[in-house]
Image (cartoon, rainbow over all chains, first blue to last red; front, side):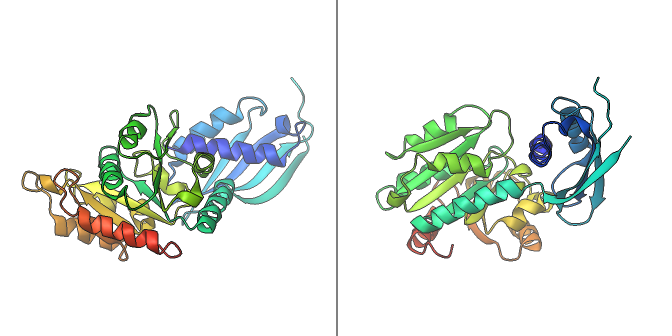
Length: 86
Length: 223
């Protein structure tokens, strides 16, 4: 239910970590999602895909890893430095 | 294609939790215990607060932050029972309050002239469990019309809560609800839960609840 709030926070973290020039180069956002985190992974994926498709991002892909516990963290950001502008 | 990976170990809720700690420190500095009321919609959070404000208003200076997806109806209801400010947070679709909203709401509350803070969360047993608001303790409410297994279905919020209020006990003669079984399920999830049984309609159990709040207001350091 609150997956969109969480997805927005993930995007905010990415925007905080990356420069404006890097944001369109982002291709993957890695996340650990705990089984007890209170999140429905498919729903979170849906929200992240929607947000990461829109500016300042450019079709970045969420990569969710299920794990035990209530962990919820961004594990990595993957960028393609040579991504062409289009 | 030149792919570069930035390794992170960034908890997604870190920012909310930081703000929650700020709220907690602010409340502690002012000596104001804060309770975060969570329940499914319609369990009776607002009515219990209405009764509380009406009964204890002469003894305790109570402040309320109340959250709803839409409308200020609950804030209006509560405001009828107190001369103090009731802060309404309209979340505009969000299914929970977050720490930033509480932090902002506190700006309008004179904490130096407050003995007790109530935060009435959005009616929902799932999402509020993920957002620390800086409260001292969560109070989870569930009514006798909801089924005994509520604690088993929503274990996260029952695990986090320190107090549980069984509401609408006046309906017990009319509904098939096994109180002992419900309390047993709740204890299974959280053995440390302290229970209250109340009917805001008849007043049953409210004295115990009020006495608990009186004591709480007197010992703000350890809820």
